[in-house]
Image (cartoon, rainbow, N blue to C red; front, side, top):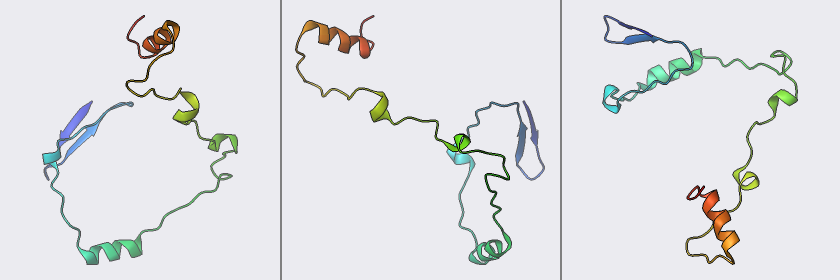
Length: 100
C-alpha cells in the first residue's frame, strides 16, 4: 500500500484488492452544495446505459445469487418456548452452538 499526501491536504492511497478502507467521522465535515452548481452539473452530466448484449451477458448472468433467509433457515424459536423432549432440546442446543 502506498499513500501520497498532496499539497491540497488530500491523501491518495493505492492498494491491491481486496482492501478495506475506513475513515473517522470527524475527518469529513459535510457542507451544503450551491444550488446553481447543482443545476449546472445536472445539465452537463449524462448517464450511459448499456444493454445486456453490449455487455455480453445472458439471462443466467443476471439471476440473483442470494437466497431468502426464510427459505434457507428454520424459523427462530421464541424465548420460553417449551421443548417436547430431550432430543428436540439437544438439536436446538447444537443449532445454537451451545453444545458440540
